[in-house]
Amino acid sequence: MAATQRLELRQRQSLVMTPQLQQAIKLLQLSNMELAAEVDREIEQNPLLDREDSSKETLLEAPSVDQRDPEFDPAAGSDAEPGKEAGAADTSTDSQNNPDNSLAENGVADSLDRANAEQLPSSGDSPLDTDYDNVFTNGDAWEGGSDEAAFSNRGLSQARSNENDFSLEQRLSDEITLRQHLSDQLQLMIADPVERAIGNCLIDMLDDSGYLSDDLTTLGEQLGCAQERIEATLEKLQRFEPSGIFARSLAECLAIQLRELDRYDPAMQALVENLETLAKGELARLKKICGVDQEDLADMIAEIKALDPRPALSFDGEVAPPVIPDVLMRPDRKGGWVIELNSDTLPRVLVNSSYYAQIHTQLRSKKEREYLSERLQSANWLVKALHQRATTILRVATEIAKQQDAFFRKGVEHMKPLTLRDIATEIEMHESTVSRVTSNKYIATPRGTFELKYFFTASIAGSDGTAHSAEAVRHRIKLLIDGESGKKILSDDTIVALLRKDGVDIARRTVAKYREAMRIPSSVQRRREKSAPVN
Image (tube, rainbow, N blue to C red):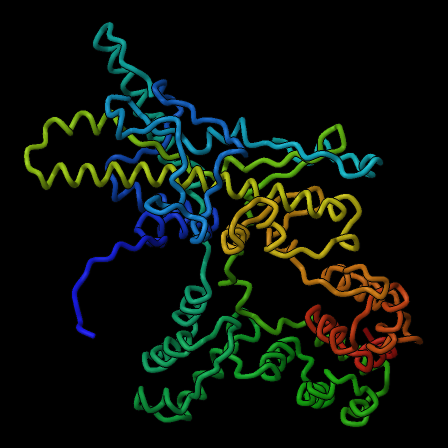
């Protein structure tokens, strides 16, 4: 058979990962703080992007969010139409088609302030047990006149300006760091330049808890000084504040603090040197080691518990950023739920079409016109992607509220098993899209603020055929352990038997895994702690 050349026409569907599609997927999984930083970077790089200014009267209101609009599902490659990029939803204004508009694109936040609240119907006949109605609450001009009056007005304005420059907040001192605090003590208490150099190196070697974790022999080789000199300097530094700083172990940290309190006697020294025995709760053995009776041992243990095992945390401990919810949930008077987006977390970005129209006619070279057109297309896509991101978050949060209605009304014991596929099927989106939406997104509810992923739990089969949420089972285990008495400690096998009486078919190793995840000690450790005469 001879080989011949021929032309064939084949038709197939494929999803092309354009830069715009990659940006849309990236925005979808960002938290509100990461999104704000990303939008700031885009505004710096794109001259056609502006932040919303409420004082401008030319801004156009964004269209209402309609849940019937096609969803923004960039991950569903099989459902995408050929030749059409995912996320290209219709908008009310296209600044590329209407370059003469002042600010053509709409603010994302304004479109959701008034139209993103969706009321969910009540799933039960009984009203709410608690009234949650109040859970969420939402220089001088120079006017002329005589020269003297004008000078006085200018002087008054200048005085007010100076007064604002030196406000009370600006007069407050900055927070002192641990390094600054130790360096100041080093300059005051040590005069020898060699010991100061050693002290500065030791300060740099401290970890977050205030311990010296590195080997001091390496420091001696680097500085070219004797090890005895370093040890002598370290002994002086261990007298600095906070007490217990520059320790090389927990025992040494406690010993430093006890010496300053003049409580480091031989019995206390023996107790500090046997901290592992204390952690195991072997009090009878400790009494023999320390040579004290039960009452003295209890006092010694109480003194150790009053010490600070991590002295550096009082200075350089980083303040955890507050959790700002992306979605707000509140009950209405009819017994349903109202779900709305938090407008404070939504970026307010506009496309300045008037600026585009102004400079478009002044460009001469083809390269400049191509750059401006590319910037306009990028700005339009960003605003559209932000709008679709907000709409998708609202749809996912609304469906979660419907699925977990029993949890919001009755508590964690009534949480039902839920998977990403369940939500994706109900709102007709791809499962990976739901996963991106629920990452680093929080919802404020009458029962607290939760991450959206919190409501997705595994299913544990019940003896009666019903499924139980893993989170609800963990809550039952915790309640059983919290309610046990010192004379009757529940073992894992006993907990399994009690759960099976309630219809939960669970294995002992699963109970042990859940207990360890909640940082609950074993039954042997709990029995030892509750039988101990000291707290």
